[in-house]
Length: 181
Image 1 (cartoon, rainbow, N blue to C red):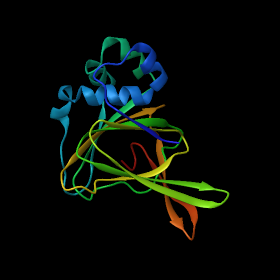
Image 2: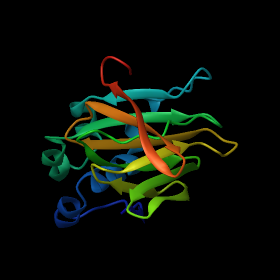
Image 3: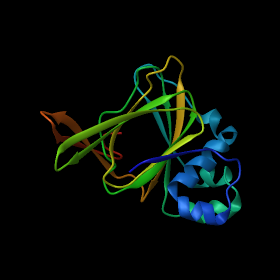
Image 4: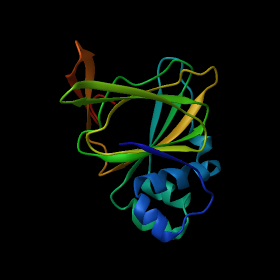
């Protein structure tokens, strides 16, 4: 199950602990002025950047630093029509927050009665969190560039890719961090 929320400029310690990766993604998005100079846009494909933990910590209130201990933070930029394949996040759970632009998330879930699909348009201030078995595809279907910040716990090691084939969700491959991206 996925949830979304609007960004809030301040988070209490209790709220951040409950929200975990979603709270960190929201806090980092709210502090985007501290890292936005790192963002690049590439016409050849999405730009991704692993944000060093100390740089991420600099963008957060000191009370949130402990939350970064097992987290990994990625910055992504999306030109119109750029997107991901349908994928999961291996053994990582996480969240992403839209900083600018609009992203479309397509969620696919396999169940006893077949494959269910849904789509949601995510605008600035929206946060989407997900568990370890979440299969989705994220695309910039808008006309303006988009930026998002992604938090994974534990750090992202691999992603499985999928396709929907005849009403069945079928794994098509595995991409490994440091090898394939």
